[in-house]
Length: 230
Image 1: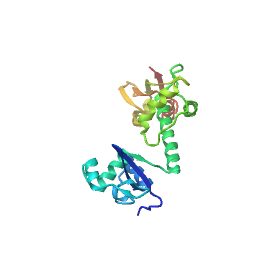
Image 2: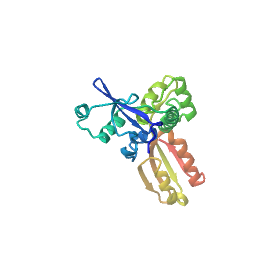
Image 3: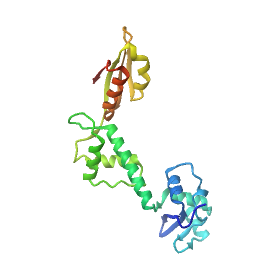
Image 4: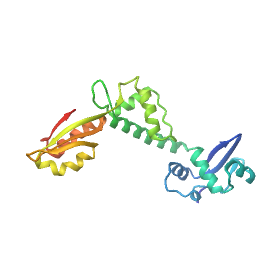
């Protein structure tokens, strides 16, 4: 049961009118993100308001005109999906922290310093974001914000998204068990088996993963593999 005391307002504006519903904070956020949550379990009150705090309900005729239906659950789903959700301070802080980590991780894995052709450590990216005074939006997708962040930090650190191609030669003793792990790192552009039983492949991957890739290859082959950045 959703507690009215702990509920928040989800709001969408159509024309000059606000349409509001009272919702469970966590449930509404999960619903907005597309999680498998029933709208019935999110609503605190099965009503649509013009001003939820004052208890002013919207007339059914106005709902029908604005949404093409008077079904509260359908309207509430639309409001949560397309409107503004007033998050609690704790929710907002948690989401900001998680999305910031995800953005940094994506950039670290896919971008390099074009001057040295080496990845930027996550700490360097985080510092650049702080210097650029980046404000992560808790309700926008991570993918949408990655490009915004990249544009903002370019004047601070040399950085760009890039893919690299690495040739790896794995000795016969390790080839069989190494194939699957190495293939997970990117796209195998071509490969062959040499006469001595060793496996040679060219792997295309995000540039930021190359150090991790070298580490994996060394671990799998006890340092016996050969790698070359093409």
